Image (cartoon, rainbow over all chains, first blue to last red; front, side, top):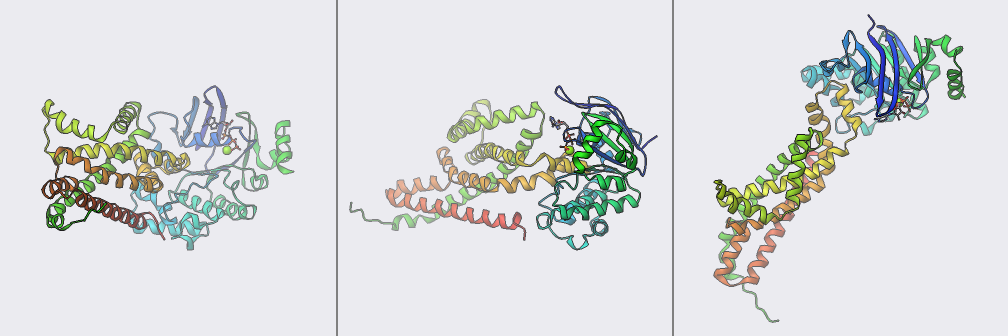
Length: 243
Length: 220
Ligand SMILES: Nc1ncnc2c1ncn2[C@@H]1O[C@H](COP(=O)(O)OP(=O)(O)OP(=O)(O)O)[C@@H](O)[C@H]1O
Ligand SMILES: [Mg+2]
């Protein structure tokens, strides 16, 4: 059994079908890069994995639990599935420490002193130990995104979902965030990342999934798939983003 | 136009005015607390509740905002006793004012809640927080901060509007003024003094609210 299993997933907004029968298995420790044109359903796919989007057909399972079963306790599930968004979504009224410790405290009942240590530890991982008392609006975009990653890590997730987490950043800030991802990859974290950084996908991903019109159009080992696309759609897409 | 002001008799009755002032203050403060509680709970129900909660709240808010406060007050003080519910003047005043301020607060806080981006809620949910935890830790503070000026204004308006309770003989500042007026016949002086008292109260409330903002919302 794979850690994450999507089977014939169908997602519609009204009559508009956004995911049209998507099947994908993700093994423990695997790193999947999801690429594709804007509107092809990449974000939607990620958001189905942690149950942010209800689906209209098929099944999504995480570690054997059916995510789209109405009886599933999504809160419990989400403690194991971290997600980081393009726009950081830090809580503006809370300090970096409080952003990170909120969920451990209220969801897992970690005592305050221990929670602070936890915040220090995850901030060290993303290279921001000195920013523990800062507020989000005092940080650069790259720093905010690293705090968002630290906030997710503090829940000790089993899988991390990244939705274009460098797309809102100035080019010179992209590197610092990708570096954090590389370290997590080295630590063996299971990751599904939507990205436009093809070079990065080639470097860290085990597998590449190319989404097109709500389907997985093409998938395979990262290097080979990106070097020798089998479909004209992927070829067109790659030449568009690489040039 | 040669009116000669004589405040002496009016000032002599200062204890009446002070009593009235105290009741006006009490009514205002207690109503503000009640209004905030009703506003928060009502706005949460109005925005996040199911239809059977949302609709009655909407009806409540619109009914109150589109009828005069004095009519609401009379309904509670003079109307409800016919249905067997009898309150003394102060209690009736407190109930009417709270129901009134609650409705306006719901409308203001609702706007604040709706201004919080969906992405903030999703960030909270994704961390495993329950709906209530998201509301409490992620939404309420920024929403109240956003609507604080509007809410504070509404609260000051409420303080001024408490003067209608004199109409059911609650012994507030305005009621006491009428009593002094009927004893001294110094109408001009009495109402100048009362106006000054309301003005001072309003200023004090605005200062307090500004201080509270600094204390609670303006970190650093
Ligand atoms: N809440 C929504 N209501 C209606 N349609 C939606 C909604 N969210 C997404 N869509 C539609 O679903 C389709 C897929 O959206 P999705 O965000 O998954 O695409 P994406 O591949 O992530 O694109 P991008 O690269 O621009 O982020 C789009 O056509 C979008 O317009
Ligand atoms: Mg997207």
